[in-house]
Length: 66
Image (cartoon, rainbow, N blue to C red; front, side, top):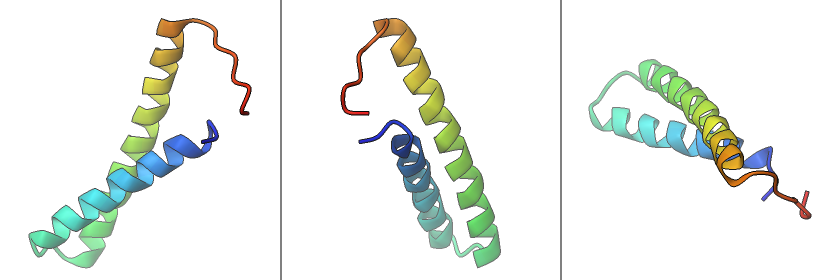
């Protein structure tokens, strides 16, 4: 998986989970979408942060599949 695609997919997955959870509580659709968008943004930023921390911990790594 490309390095730029992984955070986007993880962010979308988090957003979809939050949208489905908020829909269970019968919150209006526009509020569910707002909560899902904010969760997706947070998931995206967290994924980037975790990848950066992992890279610092492991040292320099050759990515031959980029």
